[in-house]
Image (cartoon, rainbow, N blue to C red; front, side, top):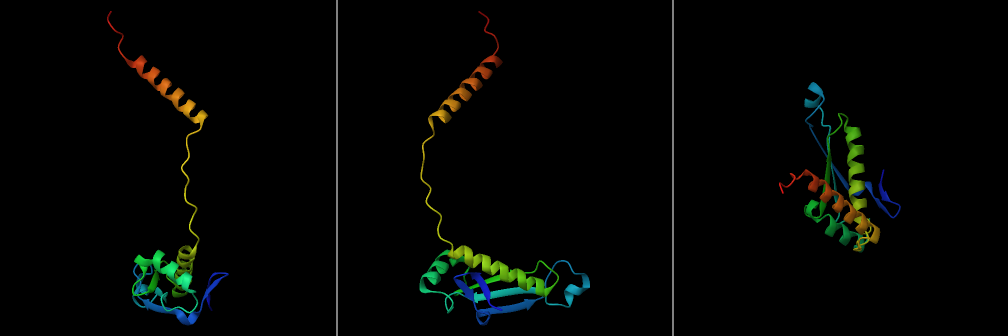
Length: 140
């Protein structure tokens, strides 16, 4: 079953690498006998599913997470290996989708509105008046 990241990108199962190991956490004695922890890896650098632009975008955005062009996600939240496989697939899909998402529009600086300046000034005057009332009366 291929991993569909978006309508434009589907990662073939043949490009996904699975590793299983014993997981820490809940499970009692069962945890010592089953390999429920899942590591899913995908070679971004050599993937045939990506275009050159997508590959470049993923390598630049996910650079710190890549080790020799391979991205790896781990899942050990559940006691079931099958459930951890599903979680790992979802994590990888989300990570790749975020890496390929278009950049957000740059924030444009704006000036405070006239009414917000007025409200700010009124609030300052109110605070100043409150503090003036806290002073001791002068002995004149």
